[in-house]
Length: 553
Image 1 (cartoon, helix red, strand yellow):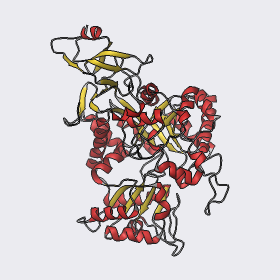
Image 2 (cartoon, helix red, strand yellow; image 1 turned 120 degrees about the vertical axis):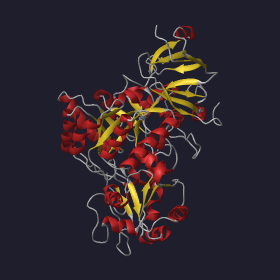
Image 3 (cartoon, helix red, strand yellow; image 1 turned 90 degrees about the horizontal axis):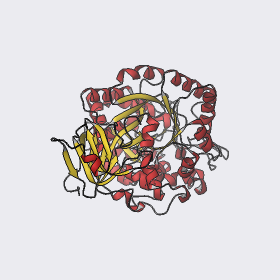
Image 4 (tube, one colour; image 1 turned 135 degrees about the vertical axis):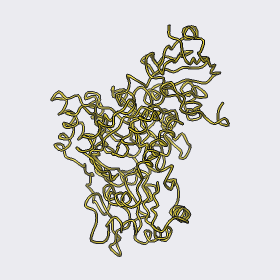
């Protein structure tokens, strides 16, 4: 019998296996799970060098798995950018820009996030753009909206990007001021790409900074117990950073990359076929460039998502505007067919029920031709009732982001364009699970302020804001159980990413990826799931995070 390196006993061990086993003890050795079961069964693996630890009521869970985040963006923001809370007022944002700009070189970029979706109308004027100019001392500024799809830029940033009256970007939407006809600085979807490109030319990150940004993002994920994740839209720089980290033995998570096909918001170069062609060279032991990312629509608050029923009327779009998709059915089919030929899966961004319906039509066509391409609907917060059983039948995964549908800023922005009734009926997670759809949990961090899976789990169970920022519950009939929520952020996400042979549950032979919590969050009150604290995170049998002493215990 193999001797263990580490044995944990004296606490709840939730395995997230098919039987939802809760064991007494667990043994690890050689970077793998050796045994899960009773204390007697597990202690049979004790050898002379085995470390045996009593948990004293703490709990062991599989390492959490996040099926949708943008880890390098989050790391970059933490290290190199101005961090703004989406609850700030305009005056507060300008004060922070002014303070941040003090002492910077005259031509230094100020990049920040995030302003709230609900502030878009307030920012949409030349007068406010000039206030941003003054706050920055004339330095170029670009601030990203909380959805990460839209931007607010000042005059100098627009100049560097070549955006001016009579010379507006071809893609996306560039609002102009009603009085002077100048761009207001609000840039919707692809209209922001020229500013991103200008930043890359004149103030972008070095390869070393990309490496450190990726590393920092993974460090932060580890502090929340995340040991595997899917980056939802990568560039060549991100691929290179992940490759260099794993080659140096410093990649402390399983990573599945989604190669960006059509870039509506990031300004990546290359994308599409060239990026797909180069993805394989960056494959390593723990990094799998196995998916692509397709943006099929935008976001509802900007009216760039596609819906089956129209938005509320407004002056710019009239009474019968449904939004649009970035591709028609034949174009989407062509991309998915090419993806299939390369043996890759597809993560498809669909925030409106119209784009989700179009995707399912195309997948139905592919399935009818015998193609079993893994497909994830990213977000899928609005789904036609009839499309839910179609998802199950077609084997399409629901990549859900329960961090961004709590009562709060984003639901308010949704209500402004869709009406309160529709805005209150999103994320039909109970219906998805009951229909047999594989539901996988993603934070969409840094769109969400935190990648804490416990926050997402509590929201799935209570349908309320775990942080108490807003009252009320959201469509409570769609609540799921705590055990189901744990599966959403462990084995379900691992399966959706193609990693369930390695991680996502604590079963003999799998990678020793686990998190030690100070209590059994799933076994307690649903309203207190988020109160559990991560004490330690282990990846491949190595401890990669330990809580500071003052927060432990």
